[in-house]
Amino acid sequence: MSSRRLKILALLLICFMHEASAQDTLVLNSGKRIPAQIIDTTTFRIKYKKLMGPANKKSGTKVISKTVVSSLIYQDGSRISPNLHKQSAPSDTVSNSLDSSGLYALGKSDASLYYRKYNGASNGTFIASFPGSPALGLIVALSTSLTPPREKNLDMPISLFQTDPDYRAGYMKGARAVKSRNVWSSWLVGSALTILTYYVLSARR
Image (cartoon, rainbow, N blue to C red):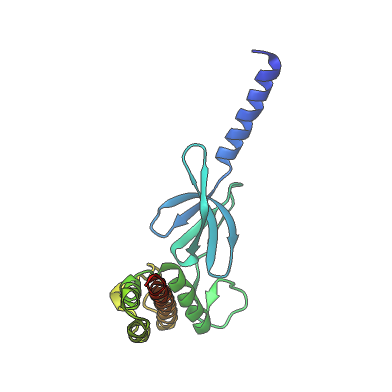
């Protein structure tokens, strides 16, 4: 093997090793560590790509609530704590402290991330609309969209805010919005399929 090829292989190996070692880490409240590339942090969320395997293959972009993350460790070794906490007194010095409105907004944000047990209402509406009828589906959609999610179906993340009334009110509001949005989407899709099927069958007669 020529010296030129050896140099190229050496450069590729160095690049690979650098890429493999250049990773951030999410440390969850449970103690679990997630090797990742942190893309962005917002008021309530962290966007990242999970790194998998020895080659650090990247997943698609994922989003996690700051309420379940105890710390972020960046590839340069720096470490920060993104944890949010309740504001005990008016303060302009602690950026991570939340007042009542902040906790309410955090609850809504977390609901859009974690509430997923709306399939019963969504599927029921779809079946009522197709092969049922748009009118029947509308009745089911109205009923289910106006019914708040059950406590056992909330999938609220484990955090310090679970028992806070402002956070819970925001989470419930967000969960209801998620449920309602999916129910009405199911009604629209089911109704469209029913109408389309009717016209196709009519055209064949």
